[in-house]
Amino acid sequence: MAASASSAINLSIKPSHTSLSWKTHLSSTSALAVSPLSGHRHYPRFVIYAVGDKPTVLVAEKLGEAGVNLLKEFADVDCSYNLTPEELCNKISLCDALIVRSGTKVSREVFESSGGRLKVVGRAGVGIDNVDLAAATEHGCLVVNAPTANTVAAAEHGISLLTAMARNVAQADASVKAGKWLRNKYVGVSLVGKTLAVMGFGKVGSEVARRAKGLGMHVIAHDPYAPADRARAIGVELVSFDKAIASADFISLHMPLTPATNKVLNDETFAKMKKGVRIVNVARGGVIDEDALVRALDAGIVAQLQAALDVFTVEPPKDSKLVQHENVTATPHLGASTMEAQEGVAIEIAEAVVGALNGELAATAVNAPMVPAEVLSELKPFVALAEKLGRLAVQLVAGGSGVKSVKVTYGSARGPDDLDTRLLRAMITKGLIEPISSSFVNLVNADFTAKQRGLRIAEQRSLLNGSPESPLEFIQVQISSVESKFASALSDSGEIRVEGRVKDGIPHLTKVGSFEVDVSLEGSIILCRQVDQPGMIGKVGSILSEGNVNVSFMSVGRVAPRKHAVMAIGVDDQPSNEILKRIGEIPAVEEFVYLKI
Ligand SMILES: NC(=O)C1=CN([C@@H]2O[C@H](COP(=O)(O)OP(=O)(O)OC[C@H]3O[C@@H](n4cnc5c(N)ncnc54)[C@H](O)[C@@H]3O)[C@@H](O)[C@H]2O)C=CC1
Ligand SMILES: O=C(O)C(=O)COP(=O)(O)O
Image (cartoon, helix red, strand yellow):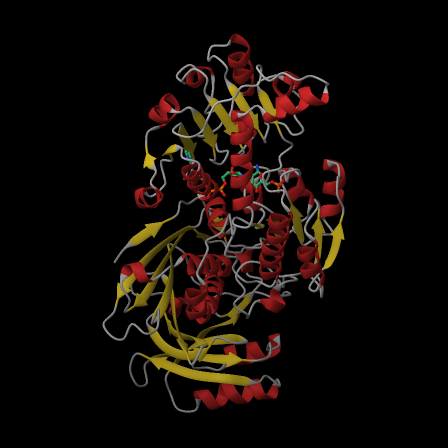
């Protein structure tokens, strides 16, 4: 059994508004808390739900036509380019999704201004450094990108800059246009046999490496996370950062901008480079300390240092010293700008955004687990079960208790590595939190919301014998250190315990406390503890039928004949207060609770 846990503060249970019970806990039949999204809850939708019939997608930067057309089949599309930050914040509360490229800052203010409506941000490209991911996650907003369609375009642009810089193409072009003919001034250097250090050996970096090999260069790479066999397959040696920058004639940057890569080329690192090194940056401006680069260029610390830059810390760049420098070749962030890449990126992001708005898990999710499609289809019924068990368990907690600690046990015949529980944990969290708060919980923000509310969820596996055909046999949810409004839901060790299984694709409640029951988790449930005796099912059934409440399922779990029994009754309709009161007044009924699923 493996256990993992998230950290905790305190989750207070408000006075019951989603469940009713008599005898052990008297409360009124106040209105049920129904979120505007609750109509979708019975579907295994993982991430988000579109609000209204047609969602609205704001496309804030130029997107290829094929992508816009694809979006229009599904959504109202508002293509508004060049919005100021204020205009974006004003518009966003009317949008379910936002699509941007690198030119739009999707800041915390954008998420805060959305009033909870913004559910997907699509980045039509790779780098997501212009999106505040922490704020997106806190607001339950999925961020997806289009990570593959512009790889070749960026690699080709890197190679263009490399070759153009080696032969002073940009400078020579400008001088010819200025009426000069300076054949001696613009003598270049050859690429063949020179060492190229590729910094960041991911998709773009490895394509640059492949092309540079074709130009006869000796290619080394630095990437702490790249698999050695991928490098070996292309004939590239992975080396340390210091070795890469010290031995390179050319350095090409292809890592993302992160706290670790911010200004990774600086005064200190420039000083370690070879004389005459040439640097290409098609990644992000922020990986170079631009002031240090200007200093290195000016001081000639590195003789004939040259740089070819497609990206800048601030775009368009404000530092004219850098872009005006004679040894600098500059392009306006054109790496992804080919016709082919832009069409590809537009389709890739439109499909991801539409999928996410339809509640599918996105394969390119940046701030949520990516679950392969085949795993997803297997897990679907268990995802529904997980949410319902969470929802039931929390409704069994007596008002005033603080839920801090939840233990989830997954009963499975599969090996420990064969079950991805992130989705299940998120849905249990959703079930636990939504009935008692106004929070909207989804796969994106489940762990964050749990942590923020002080809800610790420990997961463990119970390895079962038997056929591993199904990913799971049962899920058990236990809430410890709380009082229950239905004492029979407490296990021998004092935790609220509910357990469920999937039968014929439908989630069933199969255990409450120590009592075995079997009731399908659809509609709502009445749990009743009574002294086991003939006629109980009939009595409860006839009271419900007098209230025109349709019973979908009934099951009785008992410890022994004529001793205590728990009756679980599935009902399609919500019984009135009066009907519930009459059930409570049956003399053999010791306690009961009405639970909304
Ligand atoms: N100029 C442009 O228009 C374009 C720029 N880009 C930028 O290029 C960069 C790379 O893109 P992809 O190759 O698609 O991403 P990727 O994720 O496939 O590759 C990035 C690589 O950088 C590595 N890395 C992470 N931290 C590192 C560190 N501290 N030192 C060295 N390597 C590190 C990662 O392990 C990964 O292998 C991104 O910043 C992206 O935004 C991408 C496309 C177009
Ligand atoms: O994909 C990336 O990371 C890029 O930098 C491309 O940016 P763009 O979409 O052209 O603004």
